[in-house]
Length: 146
Image 1 (cartoon, rainbow, N blue to C red):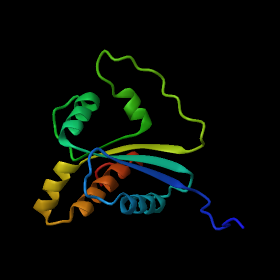
Image 2: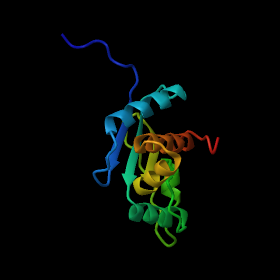
Image 3: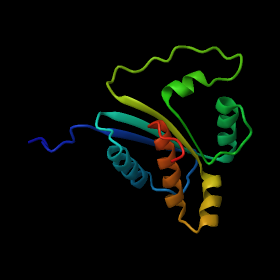
Image 4: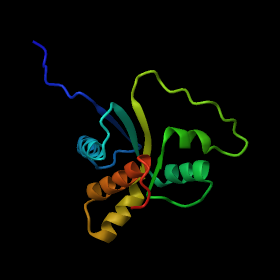
């Protein structure tokens, strides 16, 4: 018999680590799902999280924000990622998959920068990474610098 106890709606969280950074993806996924649900996400939704190094974060900042700042976290909704392109780059219309998911966007965390902040603040690295992910998620939901 199939398991009939299923969540009516699913929040899909993808976490990609650029390196073997010592953070627990399952814990981060669980906490982020709970956070998004607490903010009223009740439909099927998807969010991606990338945990990257300094070089990649600087590259993202240069490409999308046109700055040379090492950010601890950046987040982009699908529309922001589409419209913030390098000067001279052609903008193609983004085609959303026909999967009926709400695509919240992408959260990018700079692990080395977060590690330095965690040390300064006397926190565990996983705690600081999650704080930054939650901050990025707030941006994706339209809440800026609460």
